[in-house]
Length: 451
Image 1 (spheres, rainbow, N blue to C red):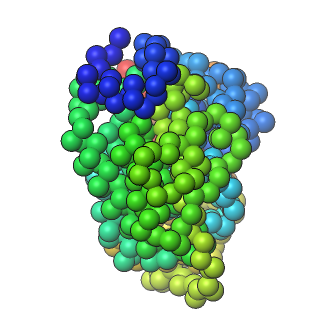
Image 2: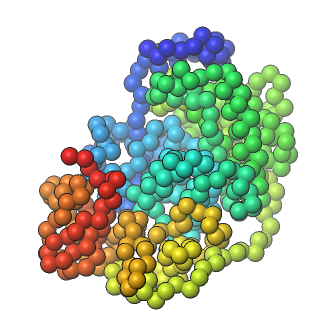
Image 3: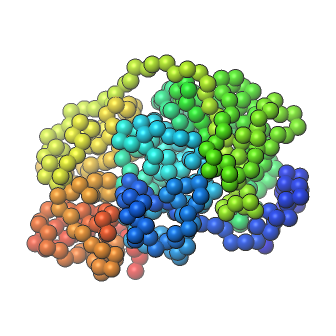
């Protein structure tokens, strides 16, 4: 049983009333795990023919399932970016609203990338995702997950959210604010969270959450929506933040969430002194009522009419011919109009979306490094465009070369010499350079299986 502080117990008893014993009982049960299928790498229909991880659907996520597999992170399908392991309730906020394929989306507090990659899976070729994370070490994890899943038209940044307001004013159709919080909803999953909990931290988090929401307003287009979410239960960080925000911004209103999310969540709480009378439209995910940890979410809709904006395109230096020559050599096809230079780096990115110089940690798909007379391809390039390679080493899961490759070893093949993508059951694992039937391994050392 988790050792809960007395102050926390009293707060939760006051919040849940007769349901508190059920909540306490749920904390003694194992945490629930889930995963999403990355439909940008493989259709759901085709993945289900291979799926070893569990077939029980998460009811409010079309491509989400409860995880029933030990050490799924070591599986080749995980390395190939076919799945993203994510706690089930954390998938609910991204399912709250309908998303159009050409949306421009900002995730303001994005690491490790669960909500970002989930939102990106709903976008089409013209949609763009900007994922921001203020802590550099967590930014690298976020960027690594976007890279592993082979996602295109993504930008990662490392800023305080205030800085984003000058980089991307009135730019986004949808903004996710999965705000840093006191983590009360994660007590079953992360026992250290109980020891770190304090009423003082709850108050500090509440101040920071409002500040982030204020910055989100300045990045949002008129008519756009903000999804505000936390993984905590406190009124101060949830309904009270929403109520104060709505009091400050008469142009915003609370919106209903999609029906599938509403069905598995409880109404928000109308607390004494609330100025907004429809806080019931906020949603609460409780571990004693649905399968998952704690989660709060609210959709804040800007009601102003969107004005026609002049679109500022991507500003790129001239792309060296060597880049096109490399792409023509290795790929069957690619969007030539979206081959750009971000600083000194050749990338493939939506040319209609402006990313200010030196603002991004990663912008679009990095093609590689321009050397004196050749291109050294980046792992991200293989992961995003591997299926378009002319030269592919196609392996099935039982081929011993799969684990050899993931361990960093050379593998034998009968392919032509040159750069090639390595695939397992149709999904890209990474790249190699082939010479005389031997494929020299280019799987990044930090990702390799440890023997």
